[in-house]
Length: 84
Picture 1 (cartoon, helix red, strand yellow):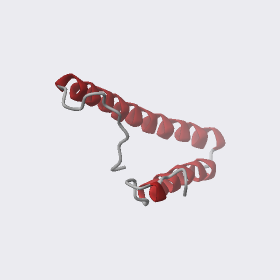
Picture 2: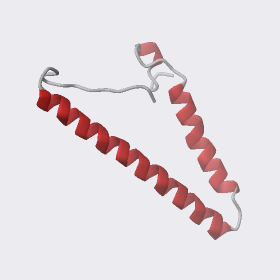
Picture 3: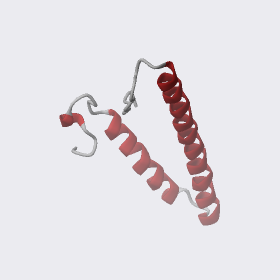
């Protein structure tokens, strides 16, 4: 979303930067896994109900919040997603 929140004890340290990179990769992987899981579960809902209206509502809710989050500045308190 173009934002990151980090706290590095010693940002000049190669180990700190490397550790941050590993953690960022884990977060990116988790996000990808959860997106795939959501898609899979929405298909299960569609199949079980023989109707896609419920899964569409869920997906629209998720997409709405992604767009809401992405539409605010993240470098000031005024743009904080939790404050909006």
